Length: 437
Image 1: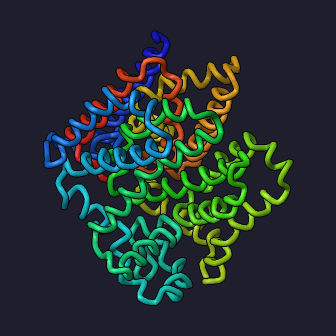
Image 2 (image 1 turned 135 degrees about the vertical axis):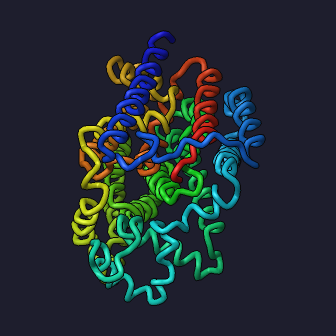
Image 3 (image 1 turned 90 degrees about the horizontal axis):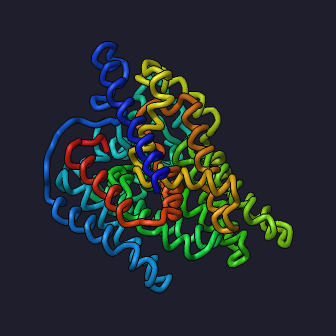
């Protein structure tokens, strides 16, 4: 227990250093382009309509979450986790009110909904997409549209065409799907490790500080697609549902066309395949089915006229034309990790310490398999960090990775105090800061 506290304390020191050094760099050099480093946020102590529900859910989750997760039937637990996660995310978002916290988030000048009107002819927009990525070209895309493959914007175009127009519907889409990611992680954990560890992880997946940014950030939607891809893959390779390799591949392909950086989810997928290598030997068609599914989305977009690789290189140019070319790598390469510590909370820092112990001492097959999955997630996150294409704003960009670090908390022996710490951190973040998402 003492070593767990040391790990949490080390994470707190990292965040403190990122705040103090970041404030110094921003005040003297003005090169970070965030007002409350390392987070894109403003100091703005406030309460709002969501405050009572958020406090109530935090107290109930910390007090009763572990017991409920242990005794609910499995399917009921999944439904309860989705409902509780949706409530937690939405209540935190509503601390800022419906308009500022939900409806307006995806309508600002850099966001996806600004470009919906330019997709009146979808095939033509896809063929022409790469011509508007770099700044200085005619009618350049808003920053987030240019910074992602077109499946991200196309999703909101399709919502608009279905009659679900405006920021309120777009925000609700992101909240509901983002909340479902915890269900996907639980399904994967049960398939790859055991049900006991999955049940112990459930309250931490629900009551996470990441929920502050899962509220109406499009990255919550991306995280859900990535999580369900891995969950279906886990079901396929454990032999329970091998036919699900095709939809697992389809969702992975979609994930890569939602965000360029999420190709790194392949590292976590490789860990799932490693853990299910017996099924790969016994079912030789499983891997071809996965690859066929994964190829479908890239093939469709390529035939429609969008070249992922060319667009990515244009994005790199756009990135360095803007603040990405000014933000110092020497600060963000470690301050990004402080952002990860914030969104995953002190319990995850303690859980990661135990993950290292499990790998070193092989504390049982389920624990070792969990450690492999978490370690692959850390590897993917570090690769994203070292790339230099994630300088700042990683509190939302890294949500798809953060959700797979939270299961490390399943190894903590006394969950209630750690859950309380997670919830208090989320409440403080949302009530003291006005976050960018």
